[in-house]
Length: 306
Length: 219
Image (cartoon, rainbow over all chains, first blue to last red; front, side):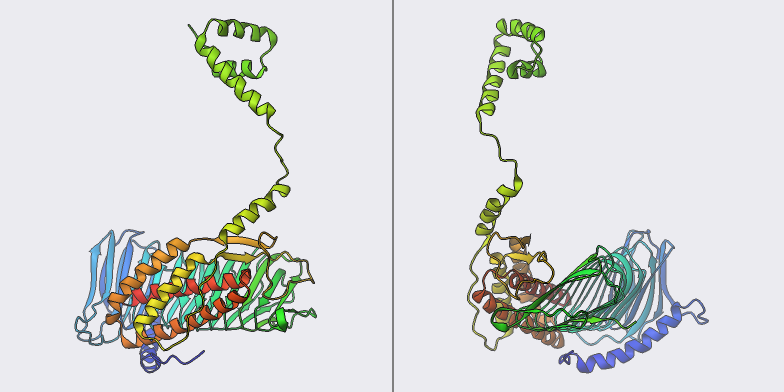
């Protein structure tokens, strides 16, 4: 991945702060935590009420629970204003931005929300964490990491890393220069980066669309029977790392790039003028379908290590 | 007077009523101008139907012609790629708008991987219009254009509020996408019917649209 010119300095600093904050929050969320972080606010909330969160810097973690209430735990940086406004039908939570544009000091908050809540979390450089939380998660440069089971996930970042290990019927994930890593069981997955690497490893995806412009795409694992995957890249590479037992119809084509088949002895057919190439393979019974297209990126088909 | 039911009139018109029943119905029609007119109209329809040629019920023989017409109607030329130059923010947005407008004329096609094993098509192969292997996947050009234009209008006003670092990142991403779009359009100019190129171009436009949305959220 190319260096991120605009965020390199601030991100390093904020990542360090976020790491400390995350460690704090993880400890706070642990069942065995002995010192619970201070309770900032709590109130009744309908089970499916929307929760809108704005958290500019620091670390925000959203965790679903089976109670009909919302609770905010954590510490707010000195001089910053925390708010939790609304009623049982919906709330807004977060740390106030500064009207004069001066930087907001990083805070750390753990937010417990009803399991069926649809959350909407927006951050600037804050790291966002989520467990069993459904909804929309957005950061400008902060990392986003979501785990657990959700009804739907929509993640967007301008330049932050995104890591998903979720079970959900519908997942959409976007980042620009950040790394996008996907695991778990996102049934219907739409993932894209501009320059960042896109990695799908051992994920149980039924329908997947993986797109990048300049970032490398890696898919590792066995495609489930009936799965339909589409990979599209312009200049980045696409690597399919499949087990020997993989069962799929695989269609690979590149306009001016190359295809490296490390799975079978079949060689790709060269394209017009000897540029590019195409390769059609049937692996096993051909139970899944994988289509890969690149403009000039290299396509690699490789065997997964046992 | 009780008139004939719709079923009775139709049975009488198409001759499907049993003889004895038909005689009773005819006697009613003889004394009822309303029913007589309707039965006469139905008989005319039945006669036209029976005189029409048998429909060709073989879809396989009809489909290629239909598909030819559909595909001919979809093809459109793409604008020539613009010269590369250093651009200001404003030009980036305008360029994005122009690119979005091009979505209107891009066909979103994909290759159906039905080629027999061992005989893959060459990379970037041209599939003639209407030939098997081409499948329309979506045509939301109008929506996309309106959506992108709305985003551009809003971002034009809001971009002054963007942090410089955010603007730099977005600028870099936009340049990457613009470069990809330019290369794809060049390739399409040489091979205008290549469905893989069209699909990738559509993906790039979609990326651009997504990026503009994220920009909007950042501001």
